[in-house]
Image (tube, rainbow, N blue to C red; front, side, top):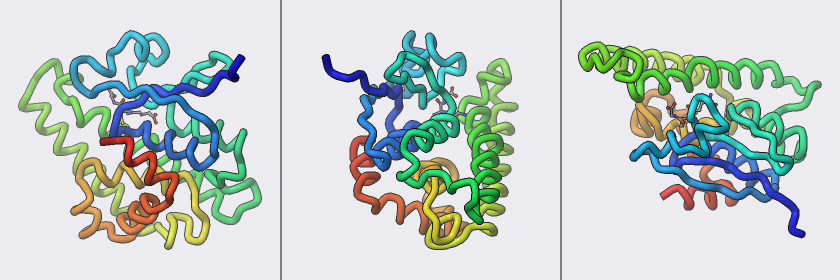
Length: 210
Ligand SMILES: N[C@@H](CCC(=O)N[C@@H](CS)C(=O)NCC(=O)O)C(=O)O
């Protein structure tokens, strides 16, 4: 009987790319099912059943256990494939920076999309308030990216050490405010995103997104 593989519930261009990229770098087989962004794609019964937030990435492990939350999934991948270099080790000089920015991205930057992408959902359909929320979350995100830009190293976010932070920068620089903004306002983060895209395993994942 063939061994069971991990199955990722994903959406093209979404944060599930980060997990796809991590599995590719770790050389762990992964089945990917893409759901659409429209037509209740993310409200599909399969996603609803395993992730109360109805978000991608959502992961079904070979033993049937469920993992959601990109950062948690990346930590799991690092547990089983530390050689992929997603997380600097306990004694690594840059580990504290890694932990700090992993959390900043996940607790502040990523949720700004949750509330700004579909503001009507949170404001009972009030379109005027929705526009204000969209603008406010977009502005807040820009200030956080500027802060990250002031901290970033080169050629990777942590300097010489590649990490999962770089993987986040890859799709997130495509999202609002978009690559042109990053090129002008956060050129060092922009350069990292381009460098990530040039990694052969990542280029393959990117090719699947269109
Ligand atoms: N904290 C979650 C955030 C995931 C997330 O926001 N995913 C987006 C796609 S990039 C999504 O599914 N959005 C739909 C929604 O929140 O309704 C993670 O890190 O995995």
